[in-house]
Image (cartoon, rainbow, N blue to C red):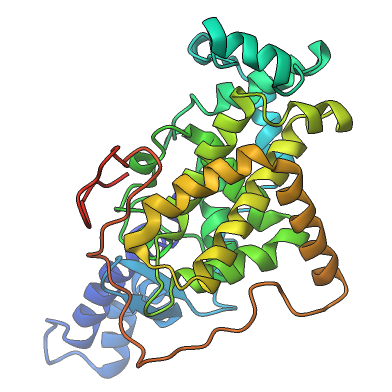
Length: 363
């Protein structure tokens, strides 16, 4: 698994171009006839290189990624197979995660009056039979991105292709990840506090037919010329909120009701992301508001998880009927500008008790 589109064949279009240039200017004796020239020059290597070069459709200098023309031999079987959420989850259910499981704290530790108040007025405890599933969720959040694991690569490729509509894989490192809303060329550096669970949540969002449209609309909003924000970085913060809500037992009542944990956490993540998009759009928020929006959203999500889940149910029902989405159409009030990468994004972990105006602090 990897950057299958990063070159043409084993040696790439650059080699093809070099060989073809040599073919166009052969250093051969002038006494040879044209037929002999052709026989000596048009070797199997040249033919293969020419075929590869002609297959190249476009070249993106910023990423070094080559896109092949559909139907060419070089593009055949180039894209890797997409991976479903269920398949990725099964991977974690079968591998040894004991070293990661040791790190988790399934619930928030409370003492004194806080413990008494939680016992008397707090949410119910998670049923005993669901705690192993809860621990799996929290353990996955301790796992990082392993570029050597083919499954991890497939998850990244699936997210990229579903969000961008590309038919081809991309390099696992490169500036194209910034276009999706990561801070840099390596998505692994942006998973702090959420681990691989952040990528699983994105995978769930784009691979579920009911939430894919929502993901694409939020992604479109993230590229608004005024209200732009880093989509994937925002998603990581939503996953953080979901992790905290699970640990603080805010989701226990719903998990007990459904007798499931993972589907509830997934829906809670999607519902919280949808709520953020609604707030962002209707209240004309910008990236400078990100930290405060996320902090208020976290408080709302923990206090009224069922309300958020109900909003998601209504949205998905409208989508299934082909009705207009809750986000509505984009309305641009000014000239379209380039997507800026210089603005500061503040996550839920970056807010200080009394932050300075427009303080910096990347996630």
